[in-house]
Length: 304
Length: 259
Image (cartoon, rainbow over all chains, first blue to last red; front, side, top):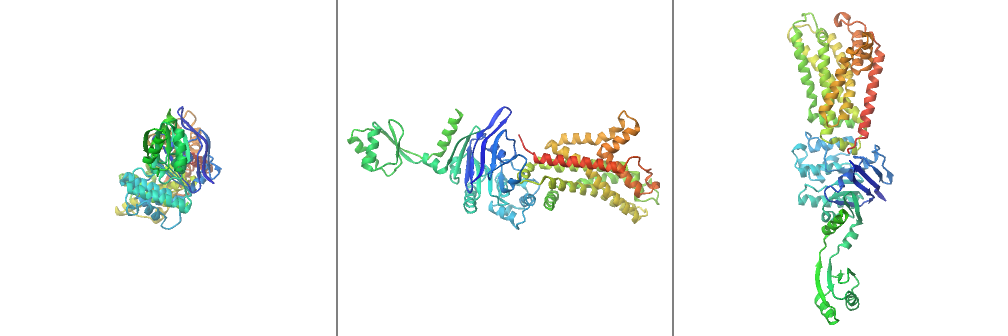
C-alpha cells in the first residue's frame, strides 16, 4: 500500500517551474531517499506534500486519499522535520517539545523524555533553544517529528549538522523504527552514498524533475563492482567466458568493452586463453561501486 | 482546549509578555498618584477611577493591543506557525487559548491598578471601603473582557501581517485611532455618535462600559447620564466584530502556506 503518492505534481513560482510533473510513491514501511543537489526542489516538494506551500497542479495522496488543501487532519499521522525549524528560543528543549506535544494531545507519560532520549538530547533538556548548536537544533527537530510516534516521517536533510557518530546512530534508529514498527520514512539528502545505507527506494530529483525512482537493489545492480575489459573481439571473448569459465554474469558495453561481474575470474589465465585464441586485451580495470558518480551523471543528463 | 491553554502557559512562563501589564499598571498608577491630592480624604477608590477613567482606558487599550500583537507575531517570528500547521492545530482552540491570555492580561492590568491604588490610598490615610473595591473589581473584570474582545480584530490584523510587526502596529494604530476620528465625520452629532457607538468595536466597548456604570454606580460618583444608544445593539456590534475576526483568524491559520 502506498502511504504517499504524488500524481503529476507541479509548482510554478514567478514564471519558473520549480517542481515539474513529479509522480512519486512511498510504500508502507519503506525508507524513501529523495536525492538532489541544493536547489533541486527537495524542500519545496516536501512542503507541497505537507501543505505548507501552494500546489499549481497535480495531486498528493496520503494513504490513498487525495489531500485537499486546507484539510490537514491526515497530518496528525505524519511527523515532519524541515530544514527551517520553528521553535521558541526562550524555551528549553523539554518545554518546546511539551508545547507541541500538548497541542498534539499526547497523554502518554514520558513521551517527551523518550523522544529526547532517542535523539541524544535528554541531558540537555533544560537548555534554552537559543543556546543550542546547529546539530542540537536538528536533533530537537527530529525529536519533535517522532514524539507522537507517527506512521509516516518526512525528514528534510535530517543528518545535516550532526557529527559522524550522531549520523550513524540516527541512521540505525530510522532503520530500526522503519523495520520494527513499519513506519514509512521519506528523507531528503544530497548524498546518495549516505542515503543508500538506509533507503529501500531512491528518487533522484534534478531541476524539479524526478529523474529516477528505483529500489536501492536496482540502483546497486546498475552500480555493481565489475571488471571492465577492453578486447579486440568482443563476440569471441564473451563466448569464451561462457564456454571456458562458465560465466554468464557479464554485459557487453560496446564493440570493445565487456563488463564482467564475476570477480573470481583469474585475470592471468583469462588473458592467456584469449591470446591463444587470437583475441588481444587492450585494457583491464576494476570498476568501483560508485553511486555518487551515478548520481552525478543522472543529474548532469537531466540538466542538458 | 486545556492542551492549548497549557501550551500557551508554558510559552508565557518563559517569554514573560505578561510583564507588559506591570508597565501598563505603573504608568496608570503614576497618573493616579498625581491626581490623588485632588480627592478629599472622604473620597474613595471609585472617585479616583472615575477621575482618570479615560486615561486608564486608553493606556490599558494600548498595552492590550501590544500584547495581542506580540503573542501573534512571536509565532511568525520563530516560524513556529509552520510546525503548528503540520501538527495540525485546531484553529479555533488555538485562537481561543490566545484570546484567554489576552483576557488575563487585560484583567490583570486593570486589577493591578486597583490593588496598588487601594494600598496607596490606605497608606496615605484615605478611608477604604470594601464595597467600593468590590464594585471596582467587578468593573475591572467587565472592562478586561470587553477590551480583550476589542483586541480580536487586532489579532486578526496581526495574523494577516505575519512577521511584519511594524506594518501590524501601523494598521492596528489606524484601527484604534479611526474610532477617535469618527467625530470628525461631516454628519450631524447624532449620526456620528450612533456610528461611533454601533460601528466600531471601541465604540461598542465604550457604550457597554457606560451602561454597566450607569446601572451599577450612582450618578453622583460617575457623573454619567443614561446613555442614548442601545446596550443590546452595541453588544451585537461587538459580537459581530468578534465573530468576523475569529473566523478570519481561523481561515488564515487554515490556509497558512508560503509561496
